[in-house]
Image (cartoon, rainbow, N blue to C red):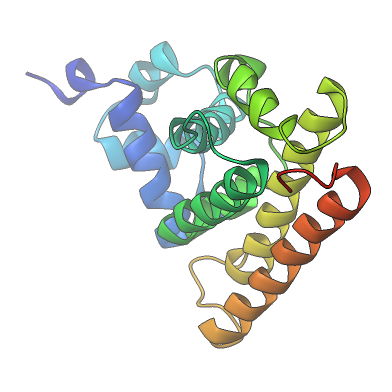
Length: 191
């Protein structure tokens, strides 16, 4: 079977992550990707129309992985803390993707299935509307992505500071965010 015949979203994304993590976002191009996959550019364009679509695939894959970790019945704080840690873990595993998730929104369809779970958890113990609940989840996502960008945004170069520095920064930022949510929207019950 020829390499072009084996092209699918998973193999393409695997190669994209390899390039992002090993060479950085500046190295990602359709030509580089086609060479990495050992195919002609025309074969690649059959599956992915352009670099923008590649970046969308990366953002969607990361968001899909986060949404898969959401389980029903978690209290809002546990839910948001879990999302923050899971997102950081995924970006730590793929440091080159931080530069993508910082500028590329995930497609709305990625979040649609998780919205009822998010809203149920967010509205148990918090006084807020659906819109505010979703904005808070998005704000946390942006916060963690920004922290990851500060830590990994120069991939493939290693972070400038020791891991303990970034760990402390992450813990302070996320706990302060969650404390702010509780202070502003908490009901006093089940916070």
